[in-house]
Amino acid sequence: MTHVVTDNCRGCRYTDCVASCPVACFHVNEVRVYINPEVCIDCSACIPACPVGAIVEEFDLPDDQQHWMRINAEAAQRYPVIRARLAPLDSAEARRRQLGR
Amino acid sequence: MAIPGTESHPLRVAIVGSGPGGFYAAEALLESGLQVEIDLIERLPVPYGLVRFGVAPDHAKLKSVTAVFARIAEDPRLRFFGNVEVGHDLSVQQLGALYHAVVVATGAAGDRRLGIAGEHLPGVHAAGDFVGWYNGRPECADLEFDLDQEVAVVIGQGNVAIDVCRILASPIDALRRTDIAAHALDALARSRVREIHLVGRRGPVQAKFTPKELRELGALPGWQPRVTPDALQLNVASQTELTLPGFVHAARNLDILRGFAQSPADDGRRPLHLHFHRAPVALSGEPRVERIELEAQALSGDAGAQSATPTGERLSLPAGLVLRSVGYRGTPLPGLPFDLVRGALPHRDGRLVDTAGKVLCGWYATGWIKRGPSGVIGTNRADSVDTVATLLADVAALDAVKAGRAGLCALLAAGGQRVVDFTGWKVIERAEIERGRRDGKPAEKFVRIDDMLAAATA
Ligand SMILES: Cc1cc2nc3c(=O)[nH]c(=O)nc-3n(C[C@H](O)[C@H](O)[C@H](O)COP(=O)(O)OP(=O)(O)OC[C@H]3O[C@@H](n4cnc5c(N)ncnc54)[C@H](O)[C@@H]3O)c2cc1C
Ligand code: SF4
Ligand code: SF4
Image 1: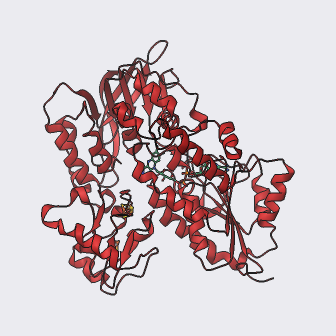
Image 2: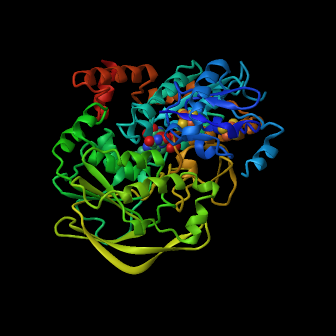
Image 3: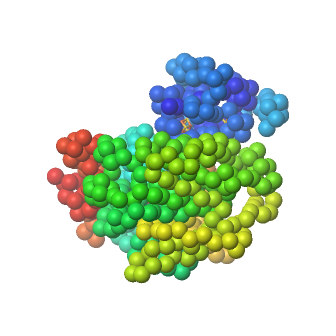
């Protein structure tokens, strides 16, 4: 089991989730974050922290979203760890409204 | 004098309590870019607070967060002072005189009472004591729980209440592979509990469970979670709450509960009844608890702010063992203000304030003693980052000549205090792992402080 960051994160990158992660298992690129499934301890602390509901427990991932498992695992190998909150992207508020949050 | 935080004039900070709040405050200070000297003071010879003594033994993956704490502790700028209790081995005043800043992270391990008739009866316990007992907490090692009883009632609607139900209902062979305390394993192996009631005053939408914990109840071999479809009927406000940000887990919890409600009434497995909208009003029995009286509750008010009021309808259940999990509260530290209502330290943005709202210069709080008992391990990380940001903003005002670590060591040595440092804890931990190996357990914890101290020097 693990937790995965889905598409809602793209373009807003609020990093509230990162500050709540007890094991620093988030990785970041220019537009979004990913969870390293090898490090995540399934504490779910990040789920309520995300303002756009981007983070889902593997168990609750719908069938048509399963590809996010692989995407998170691969991206975690490629991008650096992020330990502290960053300023949201400029596009964040617009993206949040677009997502209806 | 210069602002503390330089090579020649490091910022000297004491952190009281080595649970998640304390460790994450230390991490934030170590990453601040200032020169710091951090002393992490812990009442017990062993670190990690409720990660060791609260988190359930069958949640090993969660407990592995201690690897992160151990890495923080290995930073040479930090020193662990185990077996040192603030308010007992040294006073708040002494501590304040030694450091530029003190961060209080003592947690909230005291229990709240129901305040109903019969609560004093034998057989009625705080769930926290039961948790402490199965997790080998020294204060709880000699408690006794009558597991000859067939019916157990657990009162509460959070993850702690679920943990307690799950441990009562877990197959003993599953527990044998955990670091559960040996005395608890022996007692649970002889348990005759065959019916569990989980009781709470609010509805399924307001319950504080997380879906993960709720789902685990459905996976207990030989046990059937039962909930009546009636209990899952939602009023309009509760339906609205399903979409509110403060209720992120509610919709999934409801799905899981609906799944429970759909299974056949009695399929031969032992029942684990989930009661919603029921508040305990009295416990009775002679000489020990035999029954619990519940009163039906109706929710009213706006979405997000509903309260439960009694309807007058009563229900009585047999109850041989009653475990209440209706909240935790912190313990006051002599010399510091305390908010008796919240059971926590009064603060503004993490700075301690007195009853008149005046800031106590150099004193900060984080974790459960600051926020009250809510939030998971990671919540304390974000919280400690905030508290430390406040502290760092104050640094210029904290300037003074402070003895720091050297002063603490001198004071403790003068009092003949036996201190366990992190190397000492590592020795204890290795001994616990070694003891566990014989029985195929990840560790067999020492449950007596004397045994911990003896192991540290062995
Ligand atoms: C039964 C239970 C189960 C839980 N399960 C989970 C779970 O599965 N997942 C999850 O994420 N969270 C869980 N939690 C929540 C988690 O444990 C808390 O969020 C977290 O431990 C709070 O951290 P803290 O540092 O504020 O307090 P604590 O962890 O309580 O640490 C406080 C420390 O301060 C020390 N101390 C107290 N007084 C003094 C003093 N005077 N001098 C020196 N030291 C002192 C204590 O000994 C202790 O080590 C659980 C909590 C409980 C009660
Ligand atoms: S809080 Fe949500 S949107 Fe922001 S970075 Fe984390 S997952 Fe992405
Ligand atoms: S579930 Fe916990 S460990 Fe995993 S990414 Fe979220 S906060 Fe980090």
